[in-house]
Image 1 (cartoon, rainbow, N blue to C red):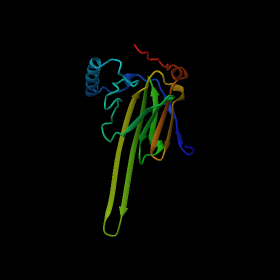
Image 2 (spheres, helix red, strand yellow):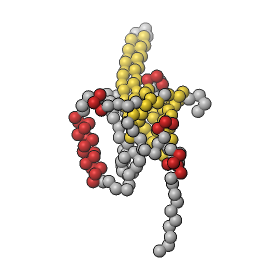
Image 3 (tube, rainbow, N blue to C red):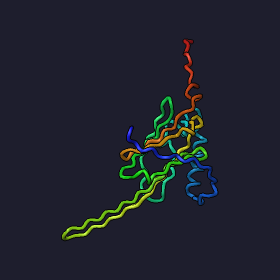
Image 4 (cartoon, rainbow, N blue to C red):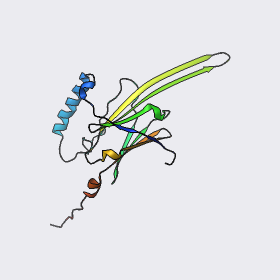
Length: 175
């Protein structure tokens, strides 16, 4: 990844009062929380959902536009979030970390104009997206790194040194 472009990851302290109220989003969050209370237990992922859920990562979707697919992979050293953003440019992507939440935002603006002898075509398309992820406490937030190459955004969330050493093998004895 020698020619990958590095994107700055901004750390902000925000207040929830800055966001406009979204009653349906709040209702959905409360219903999700209710079901999580019933399905709780040890089978939880570090991102806050059951390991067996089909969609284990919370997301905030824009009112219009498609939400890009995201892959999240855990390794011994950390987490890697990969987002496919074909046709986008790095200047239209914003990666922020605040209050334990990693937010990836983007906006696409395409305009195409074609003039031929017997026709004229002009197309415009606009859209934005936002995906948010609750970051586990074991991530070293000072070392979060983002890069963008060939339409793919990669965000690295390294685990802290203590978290990497915390794994302990438990011997299983015959009973």
